[in-house]
Every structure is written in structure tokens, then in C-alpha cells.
Length: 456
Image (cartoon, rainbow, N blue to C red; front, side, top):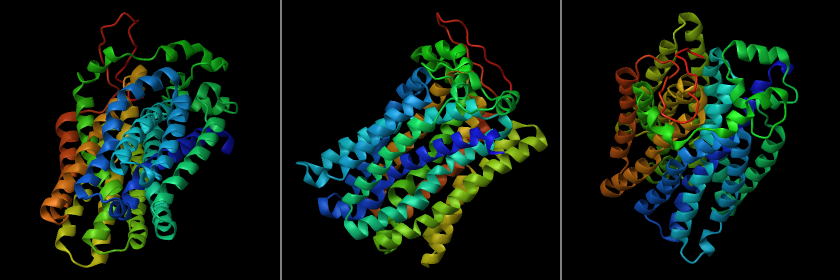
């Protein structure tokens, strides 16, 4: 059984990479309360530190998408993983630097740039390794990494802060990332070069619409990969970027992802601070309490994949299969607003857990990208998708910082976050329309890219 499921081993690898990526960007949220006190950084300053990551993350995503299309997922992730782990370690020494705030600002910016290949690489991996009927589950499991990360790493980081000091959050996470880089380099392979991918599994993948030819990494010598190596190495060009925005469907997906990512950024930036400053928890308590909503988000994130693929088999419609769980989940995510109207801590945790479950259940974005991206532009499409989505990381932490500083409470911030889920629903139903493989027209000296409107 295991022999014919190599694709799930690959999925586990890319999910672990995303979990570490999320954990490293969340280090500041856990270290924030004590670090800001030690270094004299106010709420607005912390907002800008949270935002610095997203500035680079957004700006680097399109180049990262191009890099993934040229170098392949293996090399792109390995380069990013090593560099962002080193950057994380350096953040632990901020108090020894001449200007700690500006040093952290630069390091957070670099962290965002170095993490940017993960999204485009993941979209490529899912499209290459999974048939259409399994992408809902694959995308949901992959997306659950952000919740798994918070479940595992938030308590760990809270304990490290409590026991050793906030500096050790960064050093431990950075070293773990370097160890993961070794694992990735030794165990990840594209379909055409995997040393133990059986013909039976490969045939199953191809029959179901997996784009296995896109998995060829430049320089690999496996027979299946060599056939398409030149095409993969050529990659896409920036001249093709504008063509993506001619698709109303893709534009709607991009808008919705911005709104969904706004909810994510509240949880990976301000949520522990909300528990400490807004609800009176200690940082150790906040570290463990924050894991409960994240666990619910993980359950929602994984279950939506099974639900979506079940709907696809029952209805044969990608549109129904993807939009239905997205709508249900994002409606539930708006329950975060109700935290403003309860006083008991357990009710706050319950509502946050419901909201995070809903956010997870409604997060099928990477599955939708694998379903809709133009066949030879998956890396670039994934880069644009994640870049525009993570513009929320620029806006949301700073907006919340100003809202909290101005009102001395988190009430307006929670409304701000909750409304974004409702806007995402509107984008899917009023703009996206039918979900199918996008067809774009590119004026280029290169031969035309064969695209189709199939659901593959």
C-alpha cells in the first residue's frame, strides 16, 4: 500500500516545510510581548515589524514564481529554507545590535523574501503529483500546515520564552529549519526523477490529470524527466504576468485570497498579544491557549478537503465542490466579531476556535490554484496568488496596530478581521464564476502554450 502512495510522502514533506515557514514568521508574535518591553517597541512599532515580513513576501513572490518555473521546486525550496533559517537565528541577537528595532525590521524583511518560494513551489508540487479528484484533500492537508504549526510551535515558543527568554525562540526555530533543509534535499524528488515511484502510481496520477511533466527539475536525468527538462528550464517570463489578470476568474480568486489571508495574519501576528493585553493571560498561558483555535483550524482545514472531493465525486462540478465549503467556512470565520460581546474567557476561546475552524474549512485556495492555473504557468500563477493574498500581511498588522493604539482595545480590530471573510465570499460568488482551467492568450516569441478548459 505504501509503495503506491509516494505522492503522500511528498505531500507530507511540503506540508512540513509550510509548517516551519509559518512557525518562523510567527516567532515574533510569541516573542512580541516580552521583546517589545525589553527593546522599548510600542504597538505601532510592532505592527510595522509584523508588516515588514509581508512587504518582502509580496514583492518577492512573482520573482519566486519565475524562479520555481525555471529551477523547479526542489532547488527553490532548499535555497529559501537555508536562508530564512539563518535569518531567524540572527533575529535572536537583535538586543546585541546597535539599533535593535531597525535590525529587526531588516531581518523581518529578509525573512519574507526568503520564505516566498514555498507557495509557488507547493502549487507546482500539488499539480504535478495529484490528480484532480485528490487535489481537494492534498490542498487541504497542505494548507493545514499553518494550523499544525501553531498547534505545535506556539506552546513550544511560549515555553522557550518563559523558561529561557524570547531570544531562544529564534535560535531554536532557526536550527530546526536547517535540519529540515537537510531532510528536504535528501528526500524530495519530482515525479519524473523519483527513484521509487512505481508505474502503477504514475499511471493513476496521469489518468486523473496530474501534470507530471511539470514536475521535471532542471538537471535531472531520469528518462521521464529529461523529456520536459528543457521546457521547465525555460520557464515563464514577466511578459506573461499581465495575461493572468485578463481572467476574471483568477482575479476573483486573488481578491478572495487577500481577504482570507487577512484573517490568517491576525492569528499569526496579533492573537497572542490580544490574549495577553486584551484578556489578561500570561505569555505561557497564551502560548497554550492559542494552540486550541489552531487545532480547530487544522481540523477544519483537513476536513474541507475530504468534503470538497466528496462533492466533486457526487456532482462532477468543480464549482460546487470548491465554492460550497469556502462559503460555509468563511461564514463561520465571521464569528470572531462576537468576541466583542462576551466577557468569559472560555467563551472567547470557544468563539476564536469556531472562527479558526471556519477559516480552515474555507481555505481551499491552493487547491483552486491547482485546478485553475494555466498549465505551464503554475509557478507564476501561484506566485501572484500568494503575493496578492499576502498584501494582507502588509496592511492587516499595521491596521490593527493603529486600531489598538487609537482605541486602547481590540474591539474594532476584531470587526476588521471578521468582515474580510464576508468579502471573500462575495468575491467567489460575484466575480469568480465557474471554476475551470484558465485559458490565457500571451503575445510572445515563444511557441504558444497549450492550455485547456478541462478540470484537470
